[in-house]
Image (cartoon, rainbow, N blue to C red; front, side):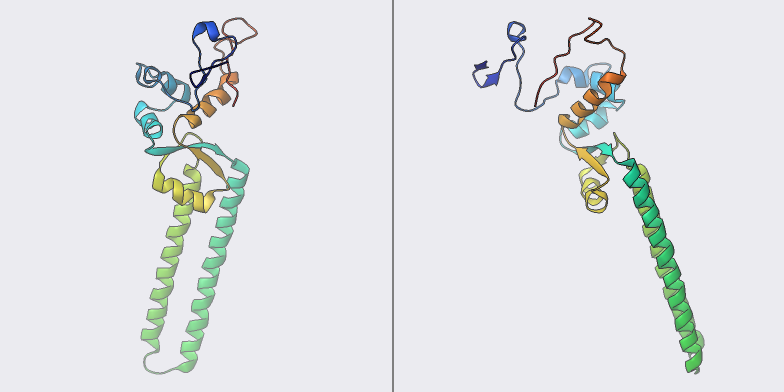
Amino acid sequence: MRRRGYIVAGAARTHGHIELASPVTHIWYLRGVPSKIGLVLDISVMNLEKVIYFASFIVTKVDEKMKAETLEQIKNEYKGKKKQLENEYEQAEKRLQEQGGDKVASRLEQAAKARDQKMADLDEDFKMAETDLRELVPLKIIPENTYHDWSLKYGHLFEAGIRRRSHQEFIEEDRPRQNHGSAEGGNCRNHRRQG
């Protein structure tokens, strides 16, 4: 039944239930002491507010198998690039020694410094990628710039959301595992919305 732009659910007509076009978070469930949403998701109110008020994203799903494969691929690439840098230095060293001259020592020193700088940059990139992947877990609150950075690098590994839709997914996913009563037991009614 439709009334004034709202869709009224069949059994809930007499109870005043309405189906909203988009999910909302009621302040009582967010800011109540203790926070009902915070308890269910095990997230602080401050972090919840960041997601609900569009300041941050929350990671909703992570493909752990793909994450492990990506981490292994990054490790292999790191080892390969490290070996390549060593080989390039050895070739440059041989070439400089064959050429001879009075500036061989200074050129070798410059080549070694360049190699060391490239190695340091490679190590830093590897550690950053490894840290990013280890921190990529469900319920992780991430700022918008991190979300965009991770989406470009690891978009195939995770899903993230903003606002209440992401919280709603976690609550509905977590509901069967909790023992707070069930529809079969008669302790509560299951009024799950469609759509």
